[in-house]
Length: 484
Image (cartoon, rainbow, N blue to C red):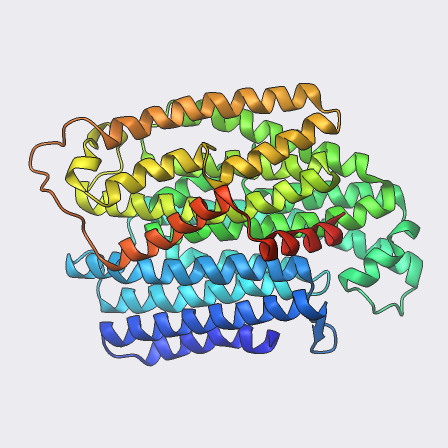
């Protein structure tokens, strides 16, 4: 099942290369992403029914944490591939890109999906290779417009994330060194379960140093402040569907890598060291994101800084720990993925309609775009943690964990940051959604497929905001058992 799941996006990309027409390219993409979702759900079902799956001489595996990441990647990937049909169709229709660039887009879209799925099912310390591959295969998607600003953003993304992955590599090497001190030079069992089983025998000092490098290295990809500087540029310059994948899925992949090492290091040195570092970076990310959100004049960069905020909240949940904190962090990973995908999809529709990313040049979206406008308001409420949407539940759970675990001052600061961000963020949404549309803006939405994809996302964030299905809750609890 794992091998088939990884092969599907590769096959889809290869078929996209030989496709001749726009219709063929789009059809191949939709069928490929739908099959990837089906196999992803099948893998998730198998793991949560029968337990951990190992294959290919234990190099690939899927435990509940892996399956949870596969669920996010395959689900969001399918929805965004549907959204891409109209979005990229609009770009080619208006001469922004040609058929060759469209083919490049879809080929690298599915190769990017492959790398993110690989992150979830890699069962060893070579995880860093998979995470570096996500960088390499996403760069062509950011530069698809070949504008000076997009190339500059992609270059910045590539350089900063490569420096980050170098730090992560050094942390990985130190972890390997700690392992061979226990197993000896002939020790070959470097999978997650084996490492966790002997982690209490590792050199604590070595593991502390290793985790610092891992946290800074993968934290660069997560978008933790102050290593977040690539994120606003890349998200702003990439096509909106790519921004949705970068923000909603890629950041979670890097967070997954951090938490894998968090569990091993905690087993070696205790939870206090790693938890305090996660809390520190989480709080710093919220604090730095807040003024940039309040003063922002570009709505795609606004959403990028919102991602810095939410990755900080997830880190805080894992740092607070306990069943409540970890459950809230995992739930927030899912909620942020679907909600931010919705917001970047809305942003893409607005960009096509208004032809600007400047907040002060966009107004009256509710009047000018009868479907996208209400979705902008709903998405704005959801992403800022307003009830009855799912992010409210996960943020509330994380805050409850913070107070119950004794992090009173930290939790109060987090609450103040969240309230301040809500006021600043929704001030921008109010400016864009209401008042009178600018001269020359006609009434009507720009697409059909995109609205269908966005509606699926709205249903997900609304339903899970008022009711968490028992199967989904049980799934997250199984992941909690892996992470604790």
